[in-house]
Image (cartoon, rainbow, N blue to C red):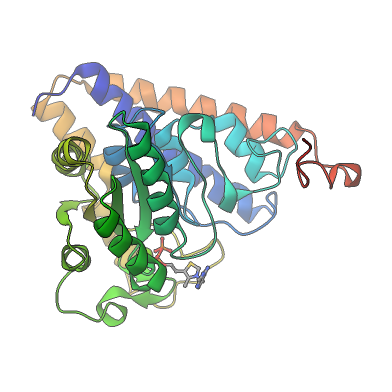
Length: 323
Ligand SMILES: Cc1ncc(C[n+]2csc(CCOP(=O)(O)OP(=O)(O)O)c2C)c(N)n1
Ligand SMILES: [Mg+2]
């Protein structure tokens, strides 16, 4: 596959933004700065970016409770996200959503949400709209290995196959649903992608810790879906580097597991290694991007700390529609 230099730099910048956004949140949450419950996406960057780099703002995605990476990959404003997570009225959703409910429909980010298995049916609805619009657009549901066991996900896959709509089911298998391993909880000797095949759609498999693997599989998948308007699925084998939620003591992990994953399955490290040896990017260029992203995150945190907090007098705003 041919890659443009600009395209690769953009993909790296997006992955680095996700990583640094999450690392910084991890620090700020530990200081008690952030209200609510937070699930960090670090480790899965290549999955979100490998998928979303193919999309434009008319393609739609539905996220999960672990949604920061999907938002950044789809192009959400990082400043607005940070303010949202800090609960500010200046946030992307006026501070009403927080970490688990970030949305920006103007760029096709239909929303994160805390209900495991809620994304797939929403994506089928969006795919009906995409098909009706007739412009070759698609709707993507990100779901985890845990969500693949939900009835809602089964129903959504079946419906998408029956009514033939361009819904794409992206299963990010990070091998844990909260504290339960997929080997225990997914009751088949086959993989998650084969479940989608059983519902009557084509399915792909890729390394969700490797940008090139995910990006190339998604290129094929999207060619197929955009040209047929039929649903498809992809299973991305990936890892999460932090706990299920911030504060999770992770007693269910093997000793040294996270250190090994960070060593062997870090999407940024492998991108750097192959970008420098196989493509036309230099270490200096990637270092410069890391530094620029660091400054962007610093500014976002500073701005979020100072941003206006909600006031009880605003509580009924956006609750009732006025006609
Ligand atoms: C319907 C529903 N059941 C249970 C939960 C509690 N819960 C929150 S996240 C989670 C695990 C989800 O695992 P997975 O889909 O693999 O996503 P990951 O956390 O690994 O990103 C569970 C069980 C929930 N939020 N909603
Ligand atoms: Mg999981």
